[in-house]
Length: 115
Image 1: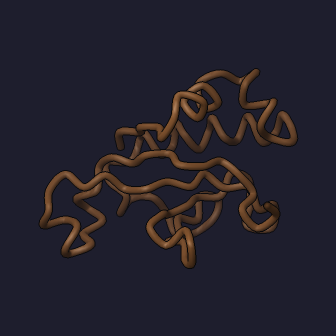
Image 2 (image 1 turned 120 degrees about the vertical axis):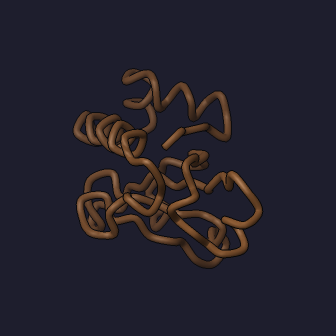
């Protein structure tokens, strides 16, 4: 999948390990962030991102209902890559066909259960 970023700051965090370490709590989180981004970019579409660990693709709810997330380390750890989908045509949006979603926009990298 093609990966875009909602801000220049997020793009820097996702491309510069030093910037990522200022945002994430440990070097392990940084290493896993880069691993997850590489994994996401290797998938053809959102449908191929596993719903099982370690990525655990899941749709968010509440105020974040328009976003999806994958775990950086684990569900218990709480740190996530939160993203919105970029539809390549209106048919994909109306049918929620995950096979047609070939691009995402990283919106947040955070532990959204703890602020």
